[in-house]
Image (tube, rainbow, N blue to C red; front, side, top):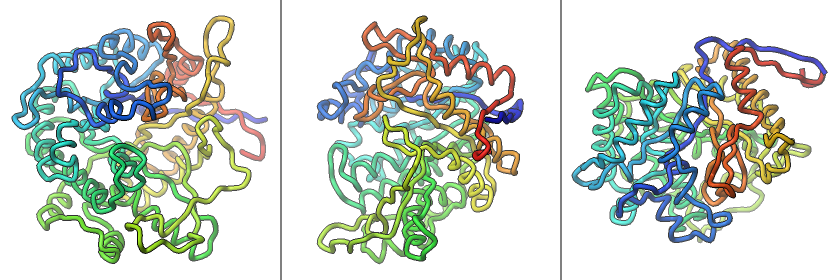
Length: 475
């Protein structure tokens, strides 16, 4: 074994992320303030592991002071979370602010700032109001874009003095992909046209929010948190290369290109037209998107995506799905997180960085989420009650190493944030796999305990040095 080190620049973000719906719980929520996530949970609680969902979550709404103190203890320089659109208003059509919830947000921001932790705020992290989903069709509706812009305006107006880094969406491709492409989540409708309409309206809503932010002259930056899947073909053969190109087109470039370059890829538009996928946009939409690109990106990366050319023809009697161009490829001997069923391949960080440098004007970006979910973590508890999550420290170290390596190679990488600060509820998976620097004890009033990884995180924050033990072959 050998040891290698990387210096962590003083201005390099070392933070953690969460979201409102996964942490706050429903304490203080008024009737009619359900999000799409809340509505899905109420309708299909049985699909959530052990029935856990957002109802209590981690009870951050009541325990934020305790959690911010733990953030400071763990050494976070930044904390990213969201404002819950569904709770921010009592009347979405007339933009009537829920003053109790807005005061809570004020208090959270104040607590973070007092602790020396910079808040980074996402404006929608799957928290589309259920009312707008039920009555308007969610992001398929042009009206929802207008209501979002009104919401964003109220949020900017209220909190611009406390927040300098804003993000319109977290993983804007996810909800509609799970619902309208793969029909895995309520209401389980396979409709690629609706999927693309959601994509477009989220791209447009981002551009409109950026336009408003700049017109008002608010300080700071505004961007979006994307989750591009670094895609590798099975082979160098043309058919496998095309499979990777098409997967990348539909799941990555559909947001990367309009947000960074201000336009959709021509190949995407041509392919949708060839398959007669019905969605609507205007030339004015495209002009607004062209003139209002993001200042920076957050990039969520967990695992690689590997594809090969499809082995069977697509059934023409079924609606078009991008999967007609690819199918998954399993790399023999791949390293796995068996709890989550995800491949571990830290090289994705460097490869994504080089792509952003080369193809996306070396835009400022940071790792907005990277983490390792493990089942039954209690088995790693030591005699002092601390979970010794050395596997997570190894995972973080290897991925952070790649981010620092990429920065040294000229990538405009601003930092590294882990998912998540505490264990928290995830869609369907609930608390089955734990991700946190901090343990949430579901059996004991959701008490908190720092894991070994939290102490490690504090150490690298203080020393600004990452030490990594590797074998000679890896090196």
